[in-house]
Length: 493
Ligand SMILES: *[C@@H]1O[C@H](CO)[C@@H](O)[C@H](O)[C@H]1NC(C)=O
Ligand SMILES: *[C@@H]1O[C@H](CO)[C@@H](O)[C@H](O)[C@H]1NC(C)=O
Ligand SMILES: *[C@@H]1O[C@H](CO)[C@@H](O)[C@H](O)[C@H]1NC(C)=O
Ligand SMILES: *[C@@H]1O[C@H](CO)[C@@H](O)[C@H](O)[C@H]1NC(C)=O
Ligand SMILES: [Zn+2]
Image 1 (tube, protein in one colour):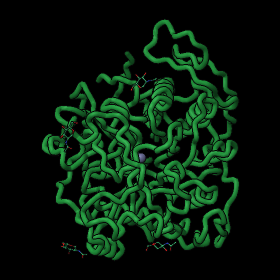
Image 2: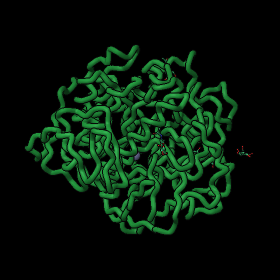
Image 3: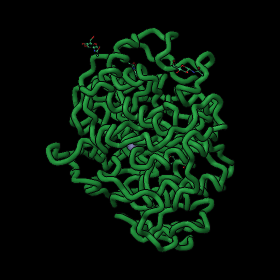
Image 4: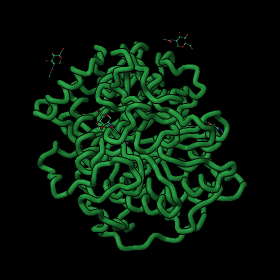
């Protein structure tokens, strides 16, 4: 039995937790991006080169070797680490100020051609992307702007019925007993309910739909360099308002053939946001990505996995397909927990323990899988490039690692509105599906991964996210669910 002791996190702004429950159901933990603009990659203050990897233990958990620690609740044994990995003892909470960021390897000229993507528009001129023309960083956009009114009208005109499901209040299951008991709304982060349109796995066994959330961010170039050096491509779930901070970095991700997808504008818990607010969140996110790359994503991930049928319908009307992460039981989703290392609520050894259990389960299930990881912090990137990805590449049997769109056996062009083959791959809002149904989705995408409670029947008295936030003092995007479901960790508070 392993225990992770969690404490309240104060990152990036004040968030306090109510420790009022012993069991946590399927509450996905992700936290929002920082509340202020970080320095551009390459302009960072850090100067010390990353220390050489040692493979040495942190705490009592050996990185390699099979002897379990004598007194420890966490252990792991990875197949491989990167010889130049940041050592585990240096991957600690807080801002890793000694760690340098990499500059962009390339910047692309306006009009450059993403030649790998048939019929893609030329790359836009970033001089035309003027931050003041967009809503504010990390804040829910206004819903009365001309752009948002236009998108609301388009959703109205889509013929897709938005179910009249009331918004939830912050705090997940326990703060919303009526919503938690209402299984008809199919609330994933409170019970694990999925619809056919939700992507939760990759169809082919041992195939990993690689994803990184919450960027672009200062350490994203380090991740890009590792991925490039190892011939890997991924799906980046981009926070729209952060793309304004790092447009050249977003272009680099796109030109390097990674899949770009939407992760909302300000990273809210989506079920707490009004329909108009969600249209604004998704609309602006689609717009900034198109303005920077020339293409509009068709895939999105709801922050914290916080999706219900209202959110699904809005997304569908806006031609967005939800991508979750694999959930194998009410107590285990494929969440590395990497996000919370920076905030100090989980250690790197616990993340690697989670990862080892994810690998173990991933090898056994009949489908492929999707794991929650982030490119937001130095810590999350260090863990990915130093440990998780090297271990995955060395795993026997081998994993087939690719972006989510590719794991679904679709061409990368089907990831974007402008390049999608509409005849073979109808858009989510397409006319072939009856209004108000959720059947178009992506074929082969609806695995429930063995849970007996994937239709929401486990919501009752389950789930225990309870995040108390002083709404008047912080921006809306700040809501850190600091506990929930890490594969293999029983959490006591
Ligand atoms: C959308 O439809 C709703 C209800 O049908 C209506 O109240 C609203 O005015 C419409 N909004 C737009 C922008 O068309
Ligand atoms: C697919 O449909 C969208 C929306 O109508 C359109 O913008 C896009 O150009 C179409 N794709 C292709 C390859 O024609
Ligand atoms: C959900 O699953 C349970 C048990 O698997 C089943 O009894 C129930 O009818 C299902 N509910 C719905 C709405 O499908
Ligand atoms: C699968 O995950 C569970 C925790 O959810 C863990 O207890 C178990 O050891 C894992 N299985 C393997 C083979 O690693
Ligand atoms: Zn996120």
